[in-house]
Length: 367
Image 1 (spheres, rainbow, N blue to C red):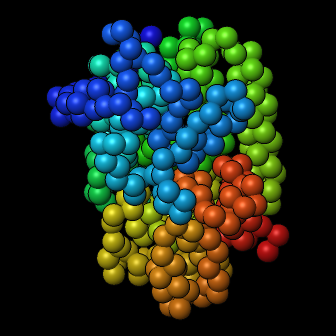
Image 2 (cartoon, rainbow, N blue to C red):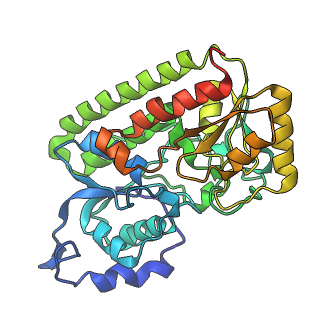
């Protein structure tokens, strides 16, 4: 089994080793020098969990450790979660710096000390966009993917989403080897929000399938069938977005929040303008807000988009000071809510029931 190399091993060396001898349920247990793993696995946040639960089905249970109402990047986990993750058969995560430190730390220790746990880097083979300064505020048609030389500049809006990655078209091999020789540091200049694009998300589903096959080869056919069915749903989502966004008045949407939607713009050829940029930690200055208001007035944009998991304050400010008249919420499909859970909504439904109608309004479809 091949995994990625990391530079994080020293800092996390003792976390799981210390916990490995604990005897309570859910912690690591050693029997005659070998570990007995708990059935199933963990995914690092909602999106990956939703992919994994559709592929695993009733055969391979998967847990999402992130509380309802919280996005993956905002969650800070303690060492007890790393211990719980390493006691199971599989862990799905993103091997990229600056997104989920706890997940990188857990994966690094698992890779070194617990090779029997299957690590699945959901980014393997996914074509990623650069998150340099030139792309911080606007993105869409014609944007380049991250180059392999790492010569572009880092986004000045914060440390959340940046990494340099050579887009790799290989798929996981027949042995379920879901990793590559690429490290998280090698991706230090990309925007990791690839999953907002259903086409790129489909590659992650394939990565999960390969990981499940490696962890549980006896049920490989089940996982292959489930993955095929779910990827077919993603193809339908892609076709729906293509059709429903085609007849539009505008080529730019204004997002008053951190820009998690650049991959949607890249896929469907529209520009996403955000005064905030890619990082959720950044605060736009007055010049950036004024420039956004000028853009709204100049383009005649009537609907301002806001992230469901963020504040609507900036969007309301833009509406009050421009010709725009309405705020509509979009979802980055990075978390979930109690209401959405009650409705049975997952990743697909967040795209089709929340984000697509908001984009139609923002782009002036049938206006």
